[in-house]
Image (tube, rainbow, N blue to C red; front, side, top):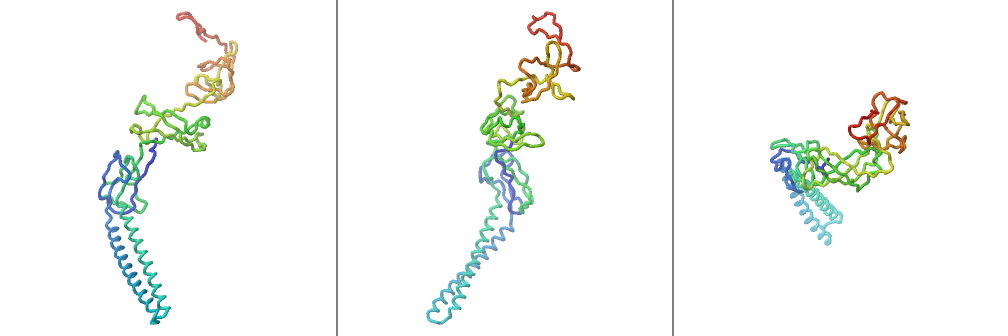
Length: 317
């Protein structure tokens, strides 16, 4: 079982953890403050950037005034067109420097905002990996500080055998139970398939979703999932105890007349206590449910009368 959404929270700035506001198991809302990082170097960089912006804007304002004056003097032939063009070019350059300085201020303001660690969505804090005074590495390689998980709905991943995969479709329902809540079952719905078979296990990954509004299920837990699969009513089924697997392969012991015969079979579906047979048996065959060790082809069998009254002497098969 996994959370429907899970977000490890990392820092974007370096510094020391000033405080944390929530601990594990705390429900949080999107945008809620989780912790604050003290980063004085970022604050000083922002002050310097604001000073650079003020200087660049002052230079641009002066260049604008100068360009206007030279433009007005051009009409009286006091200055040349070349000089006016130079002043206008200087004005454009000063304005570009002011824009670059403003962008730098906005970048550092955005960086300063990252000193506040907030929840990305509504959920529960499922991990807290930091404490007050811890050195925070914001270079992208630092450890996660918190993990926020949306547990109101959960994803359940099941490895389904290839033989069953075609019987399960998106939108199909399944029942789910967990060890810690014995006797209680939850309804899950199939959402997606991996659309591939794992060559090592012969299974395909199926994703289901289950409602967890009451918080009874926990992400990371183990669950049993049962699918109600359609089956052919004409399919032959035998008890699993009737199977014999040895050097001759998979067989069952049947009774032909009054003697044992072995019949090789292939399995269509393993239902646990019962087995669906694909080939090898007919509906009229009589199968020995629990063949004893050492049974051999041709052994004579006497059938016990199951309808005999209680206490009547019976001869064992």
